[in-house]
Length: 115
Image (tube, rainbow, N blue to C red):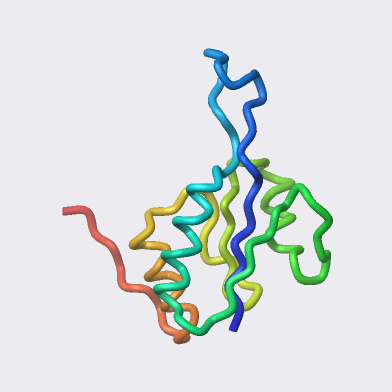
């Protein structure tokens, strides 16, 4: 099994101190948090981090590329398990971990209810 974490490196379209808009993409710290959480959730499973602004593999990366081309950098991070998208956009880490574990074990994640 393989987990892929698709991301866009953090940038500041209007400049680092600009008031017009904030940063887009993921910082190194965010990526490191995702890596740690996903590796702890799925020990022994291969984890690949893929920068969508670099050359990609169309056959392997098509689902993530379609989301990125449709929604732009706000779609990231995109997480796939064995090529199937399980998350897009900034995830809740507990929910992401549950979705990844469920996908790896072929189960449906538990329903979340507001309470």
